[in-house]
Length: 235
Image 1 (cartoon, rainbow, N blue to C red):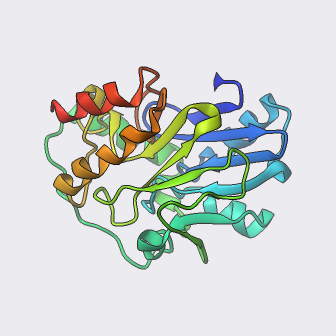
Image 2: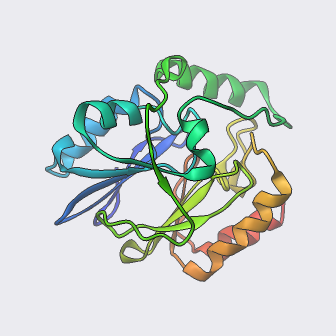
Image 3: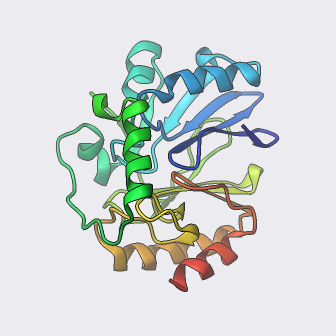
């Protein structure tokens, strides 16, 4: 789905990943679930590109519902996969978190689990190797992604700011659709390691002044980063 020229989404409001594309190629933001591979190929076709045009995959963090097709892209197509150093072990499957689930409703929970199973969430293949990111780095990749460390959801959570698109990709630093309750609108994300730290880290996004705030779960937000963060702080 095209959000704006040079910006497309794959997946849906339950689990999403994104494509940045320009004359130099494609950067993929997050890798969803394993079954999103077909969605990736289909979306590439709609913009007249192929897997061979992908120059980088950047992960907002190392959780399994964000690394779905990452190893396939790295292993079979030689695409470098970037993740913050503090989440590298998580992306390789060497460690995981056990955050509290918090409030939930049966319907949304079952829809999330059913979608995850349908999209291959039970057969996630972790990465064999990664390229490590650090705060403040600007990648030499389509869109020139700027890395902003947002520890809290996980130690190595990051946002990816792409000034050319007026967009910031936030992973699970916040959500616009709570997968456990179905509540919509900007709010804290579930499965967060350190909720207090996550809220504090979000303030680092205000300086981007981005129009688009693009989460890993929920609808794209186009009313500006300040409005999104104010809504989260109101929860």
